[in-house]
Amino acid sequence: MERLVSNWYNHRALPESYICPPETRPGKLSIPSGDTIPVVNLGEALINRSNTILNVLRASQEFGFFQVVNHGVSEKVLNDTMNVVEEFFKMPMEEKASLYSEDPNKVCRLYTSNINYGTEKYHFWRDILKHHCHPLDDCIKLWPQKPTRYRDVIRTFSVEGKKLGLTILELLTEGIGLESGYFKKDLSEAMLLVANHYPPCPDPSLTLGLPKHCDPNLITILLQGHTFGLQVFKDGQWIGVQPLPNALVVNIGHQLRIVSNNKLKSAEHRAVTNSKVARTTVGLFISSSEDSIIEPAKSLTNAAQPPLYRAFRYKEFLSYYFSMMGDTELALQPFKLPFNQSVIS
Ligand code: OGA
Ligand code: NI
Image (cartoon, rainbow, N blue to C red; front, side, top):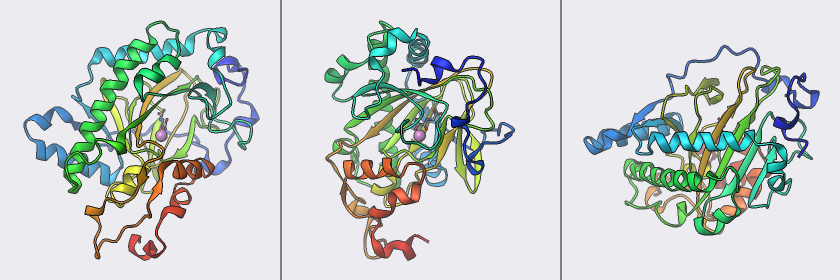
């Protein structure tokens, strides 16, 4: 519990154990403008569906990242969600102590830094609340009891966020030429909520909130609030994702890259910190259940476009992914089919 950044950061210099190696340090970044990450107006789908599909598809192929507006999740739900999660992190430590755990298998837990504080070479400037959202009626009983509105507010956000995720997946399904409803059942059955909290940091140039990574799941919906901090790695450069009022950030995860046989891109991203204000983000990670078989969709492969990955259980991938955190291509390596090197390049 003492390890939580929010527990000790006040007025202290950055501890050495939080300093990243020079090659991964953000350095003195001028805040990049985010206008290159596409913004898709999902409301347009009602009038011109084919154009919306094209926009979502292009963004997913080129960036693996986009923001959505007019997405159907109300401003009230977004504000309630951000407020209740911010309140959670602001509560006194005693109120949160029972949730703190360093056991990655605990289904609802508060922890800090990254996957394993005890074994990582250096730490990250982040506290995390993580819990399952499926099956909702079972896991809601394990969610935080305080703030008292937490369960109600997050139930609504998770249900609406999931619906939005499925809507976007359906647009992508049509866009890449898969049969309608392809992702509706097993492949999108599970969902995790991850709330990230990045307190103000004494030296944002030397540390990261979250290292470079791709999400392992199918698709992620992120409420990033008003504060800049998310960056996407594209063509050798970090691009900022501009906070926009009432927008949600969407990114493609490895699972979707694999099922789409590389038609969609899982983009590398990271979170930087700032010295002025705390930043809180709330992500919904939609995935298959851990026992599901993941493989390139049969209808997308043929002799000319052979499958680039073998079939595997999602849990097999997850355990390898977490052991390789930080190295995107290495994490995928054992799942790639041997002959595909020449095909990919
Ligand atoms: C994540 C993530 C970005 C952010 O939790 O996987 O990429 O800005 N978060 O918090
Ligand atoms: Ni991520």
